[in-house]
Image (spheres, rainbow, N blue to C red):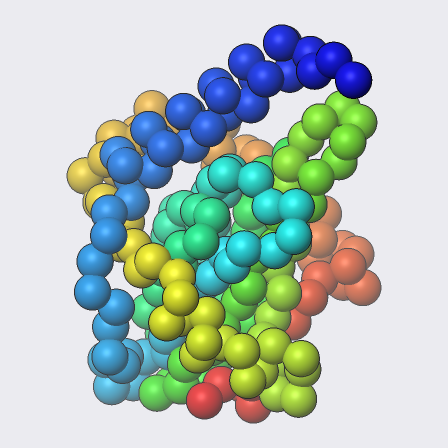
Length: 193
């Protein structure tokens, strides 16, 4: 069976863009030991699921870019306790609602979804909830994935160039999911450790 050179070139371009963008916006770092007292800590992890590609996805908390999820890596987000909406505006948007408690740590897995037609890659948030199949795996993922932190200066530059378009897009995504509550995944206070 002959492989299409166009497909191969496309995959190489995607790989190159993924690596280049990630180096600019995310850097390897030492993971935090715990959260600041009175804050909640959320880890976003993208393990190696079968069929995963080397893609990256911007992750937002409401309208704030908090990190870029990358293949075999994870990042953290520290925030005030209470209700938060985490959004990915990948090809198919995804929203996760989290009700977070102070001084607790939460885990959200990020799984790539490949739509073979028209070759779009998106993500699915998987909240690590108490009693789920992932509950006991979260700490193992932390040991096997590369921890990264967002580079604020580069992100601020990107945001200033894309502010209006991104704000409108995120407003639309959040509004859509708030109306269709059944399609939002949730992370509850008791899912923290």
